[in-house]
Image 1 (cartoon, each protein chain N blue to C red):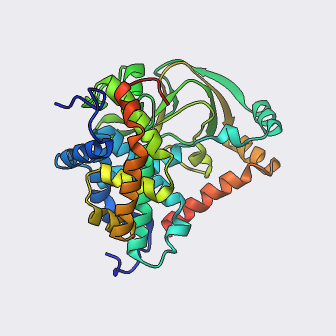
Image 2: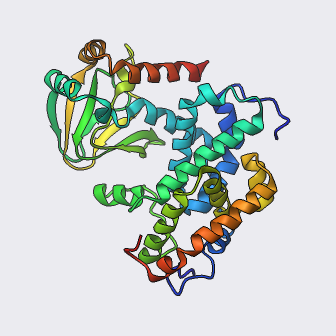
Amino acid sequence: MSSQASYGDAESLFRAAYDDLVRAAYALLGNHADTEDAAQNSFHKLMLAWARIGGLPTAGEQRAYLTRIMINEALQILRLPHRKWERIGVAAGEQGVHQEPLDESEQAREDLRLVWKAIGKMPATRREVVILHAAGYEYEEIAARLGISESTVRSHISNARQQLSSWRGVTGRGRGNE
Amino acid sequence: MSNGISAGGPEDVLDWLYQRGRQRSGMVPEFDVERTISRARAARDAGAVDFWSVLSPTERRAFEAAADRRTFPAGTALMREGTPAREVMVIVDGWTKVCVQDAGRDRIIAERGPGDLVGEGGTTPGNVRSASVIALGTVHALVMTTADYAAFVGEHPGVPDLVEKQTYDRRTDQG
């Protein structure tokens, strides 16, 4: 994909990357509404940053930038104490809002949020590698999406694993620990 | 059925996340790129986030002086899709949902809360609202006509940056 000429406008880039982006976001977020939200926010950010992204020389670099936008949008949603869509549903008694159940218990979700917070504090590339790995991508796929080498991915994962191992106790014990 | 990570804890959180991600990526429902793009555009037109926090205390006082403070009961519209855009608003407190009509039904595309400027997309003359903004609970907002807003922006050098940037972004999207 890096041999392709660069995209001339935000919409063409977004359309080309869309299926891959929503697949990754859904793997992270696990429900339709949050995924749609992350995709919308990503397109919004892409438009705002187009002056910079449009100037990147290759399609691969542009897609990598958009992938990073999406990853960080998904992470923001993951770190919310209460998912936005649940709050809207409760506040408005809204009909027609997706109320898909999240597949973890409330306790597990709170634990997970702490893990996402820890991941959020990692240096940018490591954070992005870890999040794509959490979206179910193999090292090779992560390398292609971020435009980095497979060995870089491998070393980031290994460092992240070490970094997160100190969180195992916290996530095992549960709520309230930083 | 997953027990999550609190039930005894897996050997490795990262592996657990990876397995879950793989599982989920095999069951991704359908998403519509057209819908995502049109909602993102409508959400952008409906408001800019963090407007109030970028204003200086002087600018805030000037904004308050030029605006009307209005209360919107839960369920009422601050602005409605398809109507002429004559006002901008800053939400003082309470939350709103931004909706567009989609197959005869309201679909939520964003939410806006305290500090958010809504309706700034309507400051271009002749613009029509591209989305509705509905109060979720009681909402207090500072309401200003687009003419007063243009004057306010003209008088306060700190504000034009934000607005010009948005105008610039809009222009470059189309080009």
